[in-house]
Length: 191
Image (cartoon, rainbow, N blue to C red; front, top):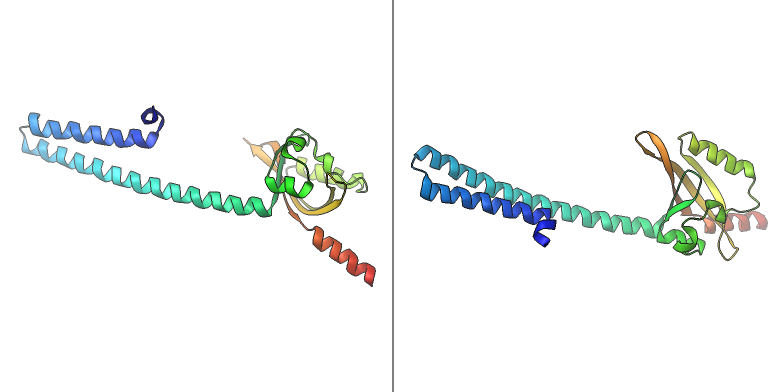
């Protein structure tokens, strides 16, 4: 069954089959020297193609491994979420859960406003929505509230996700800047 489902295995099997057919044809059925030469060249071409296929497969596996590692680093350091057009959360990464204190199950299907700081003026969020609905990326610092009630601040970029030119969802990339905000507040109150 693995043979049927694995394209790489099917390619190798096809190469072997073509080589065997050409060799059988050369050995048993070909009388013409030019035909033998052409078939030998075909065998060499298939062997070279198979070698290139193996090299490309290795390069692809290496690239995928590097991408997985980079995604892992990204996920550990960046807070990421996606929402539908109404602001309902459809995806969160582990770091989002860690910083907010909510579980993935609590967040998925909830509105982003679950994190909203009640002291943030409504006009701030109206501007945010106006920006992203117009197809632009919103940049700004947002104060959110964790599940335990404590505040945290994120430097956010929220962008539309498009399919065939139409906005279908939104993706937010955030960095936790709580320590910087609290340090600047402490500094300001000391002066």
